[in-house]
Image 1 (cartoon, rainbow, N blue to C red):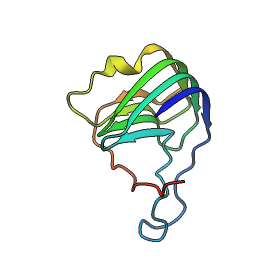
Image 2: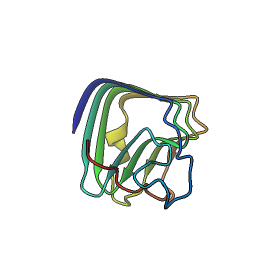
Image 3: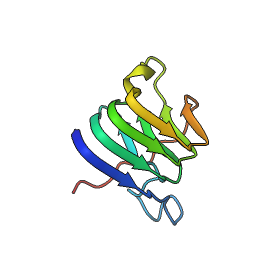
Length: 113
């Protein structure tokens, strides 16, 4: 997926127990899971409940943007992922932690549009 000139704001966490709302996320701005590939250029990801951008099995390349006001700005769940792919003219601002490599659970896959 290629996104340009995108704004992802105020991503909320699920409001129910795990089995009763399948497909709803944990409050992350954007996630590359399994084999997903995301390239995001000229963007803003602002104020998610948990993580601004997560690499959880796929790959993300970020260019010319801002990740702000999250508990975790970016989370990398793949040991060999090059974190420099997240920092091409990307401003991390007002996050509790800008980068985290600890294991966080991935949300269940969403239903296709």
